[in-house]
Amino acid sequence: MTQEKHAFQAEVSQVLDIVVNALYSHSEIFLRELISNASDACDKLRYAALTHPDLMKEHGSFEIKLIPNKSEKTLSVIDNGIGMNKEELIEDLGTIAKSGSAEFAKHLTGDAKKDLALIGQFGVGFYSAFMVADKVEVLTRKAGDKTGWLWCSSGKGEFTIEEESKAVVGTKITLHLKKDFMEYTDPMRLRYVIRQYSDHISIPIILDADGKNETINSASALWTRPKSEITEEQYRDFYRHLTHNFDEPWLTLHYTAEGVIEYRALLFIPQKAPFDLFQPDKKHALNLYVNRVFISDEVTDLLPHYFRFVRGIIDTSELPLNVSREMLQHTPVLAKIKKGIVHRLLDELKKKATDKENYEVFWRDFGIVFKEGLYEDQENAKKIADLCLFSSTKDDKLTSFADYVARMPKEQKNIYYLTGDDLATLKNNPQLEGFTARGIEVLLLTDPIDEFWPQMFTEYDGKKIRPITHPDVDIDKVKAIEEITGESIEENLQTVLIAKFKEVLGKEVNDIKITNRLNKSPVALVAGEGQMSIHLERLMKQHGQAQAFASNRTLELNPRHPVIKKLATAIFEKKEEAKVLDAIWVLYDQARAIEGEPLRDPAGFIAKVNNFLESGL
Image 1 (tube, helix red, strand yellow):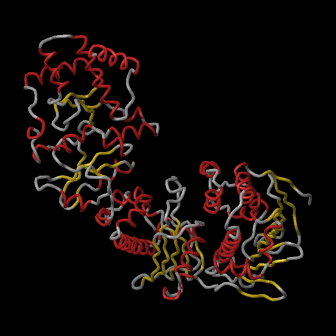
Image 2: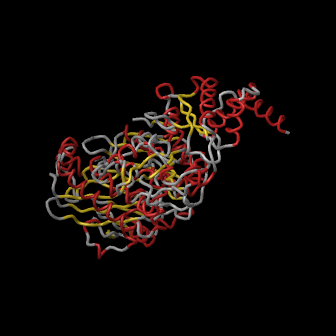
Image 3: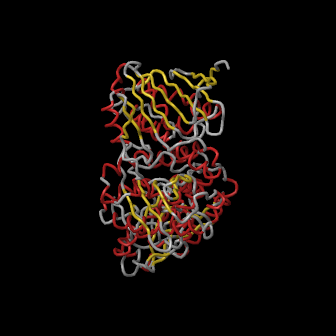
């Protein structure tokens, strides 16, 4: 068969450009990636053979072999795993379709070291081979096929594929090493790299050098060994193998569950959030094994969605080896294992939370996801709430529910919060003024999930959780405003003031009300009873649902503010009608702007403000 030429997908070319044209202090990472891929290939064949035993008919024990050749300047990595057919070679080595090419391109930074870390996370660690090689050959044959294939590329925009009759089941990757990387033909160097990065691989890694075959890894599943026999370095290396990260895990949890359901667990929480944490199709990333045989990394029932950042291994003997994907969806065993995992993770987080500084490292990256549990997991909502941290009006430090409640005045019955797009804007929101003047602390919530969890988790320690704009919020019961800012305008002036605002603004607003929630600002826009918050409506609009959720708001007036007092007097005395009309519209636009809403008529607003400035000057 003739040789076929194919062009790499554009995003693959970007990866290769990063790899080939940058100098890395950790070039040996290529070997970790190739060994990891070889291990996965063996796991896949072992799983496939459970239902198709013929695939293993002429197969010996699984192994991964390294063959350095100094005279030919090559290093070969060979596995007897599942192998690839022609279509898989093109798809897996020519594109980044599985991980989302657009998503990968979006995360490229131009910083070589940061972009290198992304390569493994996107499942394209194969391309790291071009760090050390100027030509890569892949000889492979898929289990069950009679035809083998040879893939070849110099990493410069294209690759070739041709049929190869001599290929055996599995994959042989031959790296033609660059002159600066001949160290990878040195057996001593290879032993060191394997023991540093891949010692935990449960398949024997055999070094074929100097006429000898030598197993250079411990070749036992790390999670099956006693904790006392495992070093922090071994846990770290296994974590890096599993996640393709370069950091160290923030939390390592290794335990054996015994009793009604027995399983082993080795779980990690990373230091940093993965790039795909908020992708809608983000999969729960626990690998399921049955008696050390890999079954699947796509079992969504092992973790609740709010723990989707946890990585690791679950190994159980409670399932049959030939368990199908359909059986996994319906077995009660997974539900019991899931319950046990959640319980242990929450307990470990509680322990970690005693070191607040270190716990905040976790919270700043994963708190936005973890809070989803307040909405999703009613059984564990209280435990989750105990672990949540929030910004508040007290100071710049994060606070817990428990600390907030401990600081509450005895007259205060509710936990108060305000939602918005960012912390700086929230701190300047006029709706906080009445609370601040009375010394009432307010939680400041800026994550999208903060609009939803209070609908399900409505109470903590006997205190109701309320937005500060809620109709039943009466902060005068905590402390009367007259003690702080003086008297309000008279009721007869309030009546004419409200009537005039309603007349001028018409359908622009749902209602006009006098409020005790403002202290320094003259006006504020709030959601009416039964309406979604302004912040939530804005989120809906950003997702193309503007028409379905658009609604008018209530404009609240501060009856103690000098501007409102003078305006009320002018309306009552029927003076300067034109200025009164302009003032009402300016105040309304001011309220919209403070909430992050666009001005109705920017040019008109500026003209009115300039007229007032000119008159004042």
